[in-house]
Image (cartoon, rainbow, N blue to C red):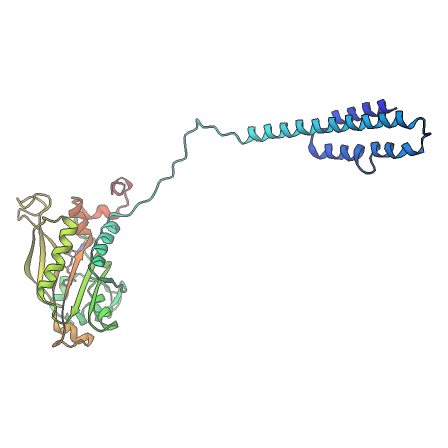
Length: 335
Ligand code: FA5
């Protein structure tokens, strides 16, 4: 009878293919109300002479069933693991997935380099709006209405009183209005002019600089700009100041560096002169101080402004400004 039980168990075990069914089978035979357990319980109702023989048989069957269940459980687990490994196998001979990394745009790269040099010299960074009032872009900078100097910058008008700023110089005025001297900041950002050829685009970037304090002189301006240009273009780069005109500075200067392509010998880029114009600068015109309420007797200052596209073109010998804005990945990848 016990042997029949073992055989029935083996047949049932044979048909089982997953751990959940196996567990049910274990409960069926070895659980509290299982077949084997109830056989063991029924021993007490047997005549005492039959108990040892029958008890031994039931215990053997219990051990046998336990061993069989454990072995099957191990087999099933093993099969499952094999299936999982097969499903998750990786073909290491396939080519990897290429994730292209973005990189800094050359204009941003130069802009950050410029900002970094001035921040290290103690300048803070100031920002202003790109859609600007005529007052800040022109009037407070000593460009009176209908003054011919306004023609120097081809302006995009939003309305009679509002323009797309043509330079970063309005940030000088906004920055000074916000605080009392001493002031020392730079103002990087986008500016707009109705202008387009191989050295001009309708949108470009400038960095403005302003320093106002008691006793600031043209020598300070020269020192700061020479230090900057030597860090940007190399310590042996020649720098020269030429007289120029801006309504908001007096005296004004245009600053040139020795042509970095021909080392001053004269080439196509410097048009044979050996020099390249790099920025505009000068001592802040007292008329501007009056607009911001600074005492012109007590304070003096200098300002400068440079075009970032121009600096980038010189640094990397690029001869067409439009390349920066065409988003040709083959060009941009080189920086
Ligand atoms: C100015 O804009 C003055 N605000 C600079 C200044 C600031 C002078 C403070 C004195 C004191 P200018 O118009 O020269 O000056 O422009 C400065 C630089 O902007 C130029 O040297 C040139 O590098 C760049 N630039 C001008 N127009 C364009 C354009 N359309 N595209 C690209 N760069 C331009």
